[in-house]
Image (cartoon, rainbow, N blue to C red; front, side):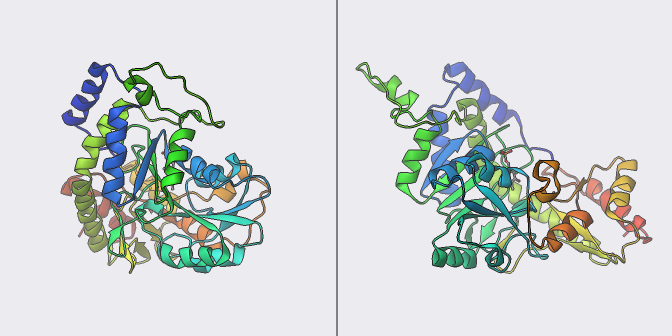
Length: 374
Ligand SMILES: *Cc1c(COP(=O)(O)O)cnc(C)c1O
């Protein structure tokens, strides 16, 4: 991944600096409402990262000690960590082989009387099938949180992915399409949760810094509960506003490049490329391929073969349950998680990638499979 940043972002950041208002202020307010409108969510609360958005989401739900939160192991580690932050126990659910996401089928067997929430991830931008999960959770009185870190610009059942969620967490890290350097957002359909999230990101204060600044009278704030400093800066939001205007173009280009890969790699034996699911469209934040037994090289061998030619690919999505941080953590069957994490790799894909660059990647993968260049 390479972020698609240019002079416009640099100018927007410089204007924020020149304005003298660099912490959370008017640009953050503008960015959060523009982003929420883009994904079709009623409320957006900008925060410092997706990790802090996930923490806030579980905190807002009152989840804590003794509670279980179902998460995919097949995700960036922050998904599971958010449960640990509130004192709860993450319970790993396996994923579907086709899309790499948890589903009602994989979540139901791990639900217990202690389950208070399920975190569904749109992994690599691939929209998860959230509707059956939402129905399952509603029947059992369990909250559903969407980790939409990678999913800005993806679509689910004809609408922007993540926009319908009661609580969704987004990331603006440079590995994602839209970047603010670091940054995140919590979107919600619940006005009261939005009010409380705004307060919690700012130390639990009843007034924002902007409120105080705008008041003609001296105002004394009070701290209604123990909160956090999870604010985004106006410099970041200024960049985010420019990036948001480019998001549609980024999605179009990524889908074009993804479709080139799908076509060019279709006849390579033993190789499967990630595909849109029947219920939506991915922004292809991560374009992964799975190597099966009939591909002549193992995953790490292909990564090395690519690296030898100066092509930087990456191992597939991690399996959190295998990390030292979760050593000894009990879990059930994670067969598909282990299969995908061991046998997938993420190919280079970025907005400014040229046809020649992409052709080179394809040729190397074909050559490693014993095929001639296409
Ligand atoms: C990137 C990512 C995160 C963390 O996002 P940050 O903004 O870096 O905190 C969380 N979950 C998933 C699925 C991610 O891909």
